[in-house]
Length: 530
Image (cartoon, rainbow, N blue to C red):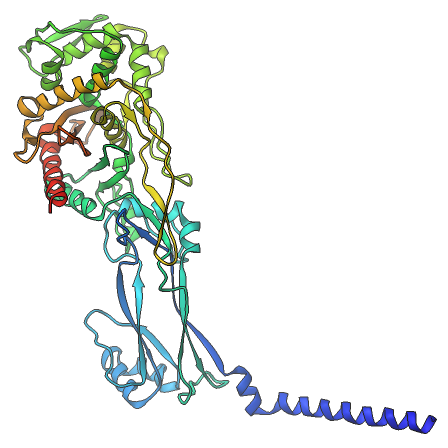
C-alpha cells in the first residue's frame, strides 16, 4: 500500500515537472513571445458628439479630412518621399513602421494597394456660430460656448476609430497580416441639437460683415417661442490661433449678442407699454424741443421740437420729451415692474450653467426724483440690457403679450440620428393683447415715416425701433462712445421673426443697424419662400 502511494506521488511529480518545463519553453521561445506581442492598436481619431441646428444639419463634424495608413513597401516609400521628403520616409516606412498621416488638401492618396484611406471628421469645417459653439482644448474638452457647457453630453455621444495590425517585438509591421478597422461608434450620429438655423445664422453673419459692424452683434428669434435662430458677434476669434486672439484689444472672445449695453430709445416701447397697461395717456403732448424735470433739462433729438404728438407719432419719431413726460406720469415703480415682466434685469440660462449677462435695472430707491424716472423712461441712466433681452421684449409685442424664455438648446440626438426634443415650459402672459396691438401700430409707423424708414422693404411690412445710447465713456480722442441699436419684427400681419442689431461706437441706429436688419429680414423672407 505504501509503495503504491509513493508511486502515485512520483507520477504526479513527473507530470507537474513536465508541465512546468513546457510552460517555460513557451514563455522563452521567441516565436511564441512574438505571437504574444504581435497585436498593435493605432488610435486614429476620437471625435466629440455632433452639434446640430434645428433642422439636424451639423454645425460641427461637418467636413472630412483624409488620413492614409501606409504599409512599409517600396511603392509606399516612394510615395511618402515625394510628398513629405525622403528623410521622413526613411524614419518611418524605411524602418518597417506602419505609418499614418493626414493629407493636405493638395496631396492625393497613393495609387498602390498597400494602404488604407479613412474619412476622418474635421470638428470645425467652418467658423459659423463661432461664439455660440465655442472651441475645445488639446485634450478635446470644451473651453467656451456650447462646447464647454455641454461638454459631458458631447463627450459621451462621441466615438473613436482605430486600426489593429501585426508587428514584431521591434515594432516592425508584419505585412502578411491584414489591417483591421475598429469603429467604436465613430460614425454614429449622436449629439445635441440647437435652435439655431444654419441658413439664418449664415445670413446674419454676412449681413454684419456687409454692414461694417466691426464691433457688435445681432440676434434673430422665433417670435412665437423665443427660440434663438441666429446669434452673431464681431469681431471673431481664431480657433487656430487662440493666443493671438487673446491679445487682441478688440476682445474677440466676447459674445456681444449676450452682453449688456446702455439701451437708449429702444426702451421707449417698454415705457409706452407700461403707461397703456396702467391706463395713462398723453395724446396731446406738445414737444417744444426740451423738457425740465427736477431742475434738469432734457433735450429732444429735434432741436426745434416735434410739436403736438400722440403715442404713435412720438414712438415713430423717438421724441425724448414725450416719453420723459409719459414715464414720470406713469411712475418709476410701475416702469420697473413692467420691465421686469418683460425680462429685463435677469440673466438668460442657456442650460448647464451657460448664462448670458443679466443687464441692470435701477433699484427703486434710485428713482427718487422725476429726473431719475425720466432718465429711465427713455432708456438712459442705470439701465443696461443685452441684444437678446431687447429681442425677447419685442417678441412679446409681436406675439400679443406672451413672454417665452429665450433658449438655444433643443434636445438630444440619438446614435441612430433620431431626435428627442426637450420639453419647453409654456409661455406666460405679461401684457394685454390690446396693449401690444397699439405698440405694433406705432412701430409700423416708425418704419413707414419715422426713424426706422431706412429699413423699409417692399417685400413685407416691418415694425421697428431705433436707438443711440450714450455710454458716458470716451475714446482716446475724447469722443463719447455711443451704442447704436436697431430692433424690429416682421411681417406685420403675422410676425414670425424678431431681429436685434447693435454696434459699439456707432453713429445712429437708422444708419448703422437698419441696413443690417433689412438685409437679414429680406433674405430670411426669400429663404422662407424658396
